[in-house]
Length: 163
Image (cartoon, rainbow, N blue to C red; front, side, top):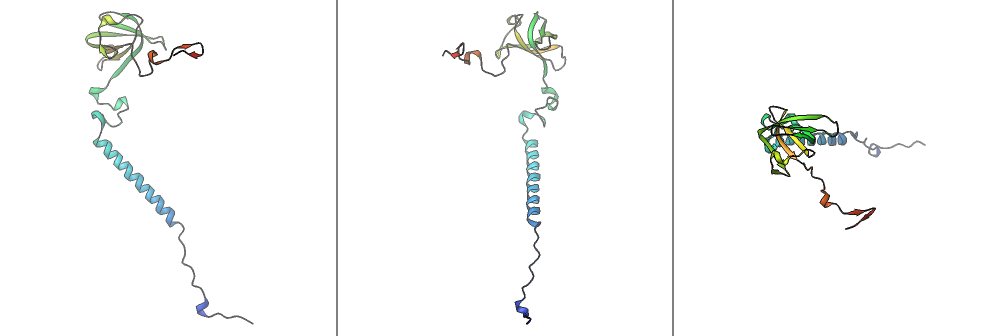
């Protein structure tokens, strides 16, 4: 015997599910957040550049011309006179001579110093002039680069810390 069903017994077909809608909406939302963040960041940088420096201030080439500083050399003083200083790079053994002028600033531990404070054998860092790489704009005697000083280190005897 065959079974017959009435129309009311038939189930309505399910609506077609769109499984791609949710991932697409999430992707578009994430892309919108990225674009808005990028735009906000560039606008912030454009209006809040630090110390008047150009965009990309960590690059020497990006500095405005007037504030560009040239590095001269770091090394040991081999010759010093009232008019010039010769510095030997301890890594390359190359020597460089720089003219000393009345506008050359000499520093020792951040304080003003004079040419007579520089001795043969001292470690110095020379910053060359913006206009002439062979002229010293600044000479720093025994420069410090911010690490621990020998005064901060403990006394050691063999493998034992004494203090």
